[in-house]
Image 1 (cartoon, helix red, strand yellow):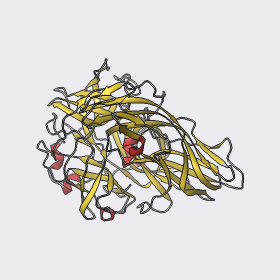
Image 2: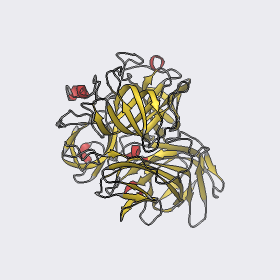
Image 3: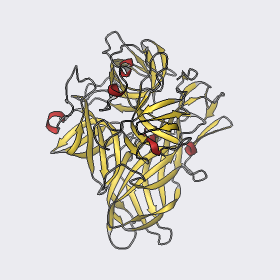
Image 4: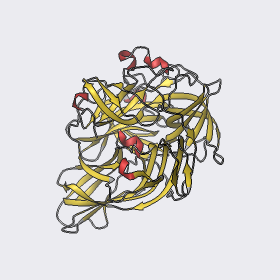
Length: 513
């Protein structure tokens, strides 16, 4: 694997048109059918998740967030409508959803019937991107030079009407729908001008029924909501995780819930894997939770991993430049702010951040979330675990850092932090699958910026939902992938200083778009 050409991190505000938002992502809301819900008899629950696909080749997207203020299902013949509107207005970070699913909401009383179109109210787009086009890109009179990483806030006010390829039937039982954003059609560069649009000329939005074809989920399960990070509150066996940037997600633990050790367990034991609810769950913890969306609209905890005993500042992002052994730059993709005593101010998802490693930084951690990386690739994990410098850090990796000090952005200078910890977490990316395929490995090529080459992906076979097993979406294992077709994954990206490891990707999730 060889590095792409270096990028200059240039943070440009292309427009002040981004709508003000209170959250950034998965909002575990409820709600119901509001306003005109059509006629007819009977109602049923409808649950909606969100995904994305097809990142554009014209520009290297790193972060892309939009606000969704409502979804309306329509029947063009009868005029019946069902408005799926939450009490809050969620904003989603779409680049995380290449492999993951976000929970939009469950609506328990939608009028039964057939709906052949939908209106999705989308407003405000904020993107961070790598300009690898060979020329400057202009948007709203601001220029992003070639080989630069830029941000742009764009005013987008579209409520496109989508004609559904397959009409949605809401019957007497629960209905699951996925709303997918085609990123390649949403973001275009033509004549050096960058544009974001949600009109229907090049369809951006589409619905499909849940569960998806070839799902490895069991009966009565619609989707998996992965890696929701936030602070815990507890009521009986029900856990609510609240994130300042992603809203809330509420799920109930079951006998099959997996409890994982925290990444820094050796220094700070919080949950000895395999753990139990009583031993691992406590109010006020900062955690990562995976939840299964059930057909009745409820959520069950699939995996629970404490990250800290208390609420702390935690910034997650994609590494975009390594400028020395003690400094790197990242674009923020998730953000948690401590309930009290936070050192952060004015940061949001999509912002650039300079990270400095002081002499007091703790040895780096790796958050495997139960994947047996060391068992399948002995020694690999040590290229990150235990390090204290950026010598083996690579652009494209996703890391979480705990800031000790913070300097706000000023002019063209990004905000900066010095940090106490650095943890390797999952990278989300879409590549092209290539042969050979087996149940545990496959090859990939056609990488987004920061990657290049032809390399293998390691999957972890086993019973779906079991500890340390790769989740699948649209395919039951890698043998179902198609050579030359896209494949999205959420994987640990581990490399050495010379970029020569043949298997640098260890997949927790594989999706065939």
